[in-house]
Image (cartoon, helix red, strand yellow):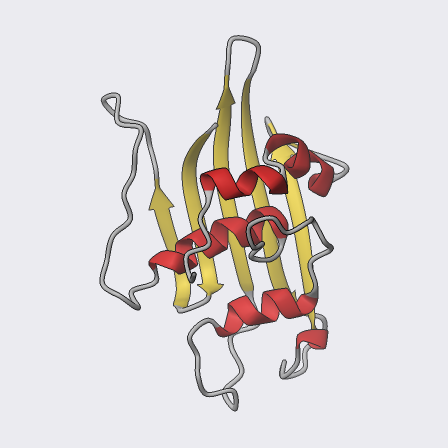
Amino acid sequence: MWLHKLELNNFGPYEGKLELNFKKENGQNIWIISGKNGAGKTHIYEAIKWALYGYDPKPGEKWRDPTQKDAWIQMYGSNLDTNIPPNPHMHVILWFKEESEKNNRNYVIKRRAFPKSRVNVTTSGQIEVILSVTENGVETNNPRQKINTLLPLAASQFFMFHGSE
């Protein structure tokens, strides 16, 4: 599997849209994300895990249904003033490719959160969270099952660390 691109919109400390391209060029297949403490490196990993699983799973944790509160936590990010509600329009999109002798498939995973109605959003119960997965341009019927087949939660501890611990 090759991660090609990651797009964040109003995720954690990132206001607006942020795109990270992980194109494989000249045999380069390792990317290093570095920065000062508090720069948002861990939020990039959390964004990938939120797109895949809907929450930030801890090592050894069993799969559970993500909640609206999980999305709410990511919307606030490092906003310490809880009197200022976050932008309730958030999404994370992952583009990646599965390459093998038998398969050559492109996937797009999109998880987005948005207000349920046109009111000022002040609680997690006022947002809706939607997950979609496309495989070679065709939307899958069961996105959670597709993700579990491709990148099971139990395997996440081998390709993602829990950055805040």
